[in-house]
Length: 210
Ligand code: ATP
Ligand code: ZN
Image: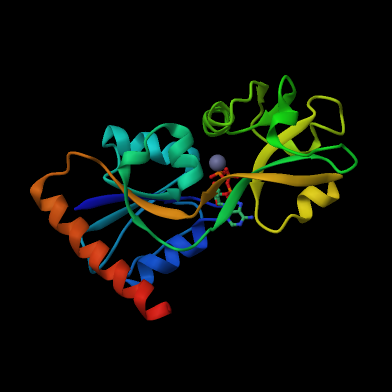
């Protein structure tokens, strides 16, 4: 039996469940249950918050997980990735108030930036030779500039409408992300074999979708 952690409810959930089903794996899921067992494959599915998935897989509490690269890299475990999955594509971008003058990332030198991704943003800014004050907040990052908490933000963007609605303008792409399959680094031989079977089926599903 191999144990896979997926997001309980959110932007990854439906596509994660669909992928497992398209792999020919049947299971019953209820909104109340935090785990379920497949009926035709030795798989147990755990339903968790996405932020908890990288740590659980790193520790081996779960053998496998499906999570966004943004959350995986921010958690500090990029090496757990074994397969890109092609859904939940988004980007982490820097944005400033619409009327703010901005010509390059150097303009952020010494500024306050609100983000939920201090690790990824910190590495990006260091690479650009920019020093800024990062303020880590876990949600509603987009309102920070309009309430005077920061001059800029770094957050997930897919369409840009949330930015527009908060009077913000996207100025730099910091990181591109999609959903990935991750695996614990010391799986038993039996679990490695189950992982190989799952990856084979996932690759076939992706080829069939193209
Ligand atoms: P949880 O309650 O599990 O912590 P959350 O609120 O942190 O959920 P979601 O908003 O459901 O997370 O997003 C989960 C993941 O989906 C993100 O980490 C990102 O990888 C991806 N994602 C986020 N926003 C979008 C979007 N607009 N379009 C596509 N993918 C997105
Ligand atoms: Zn989350």
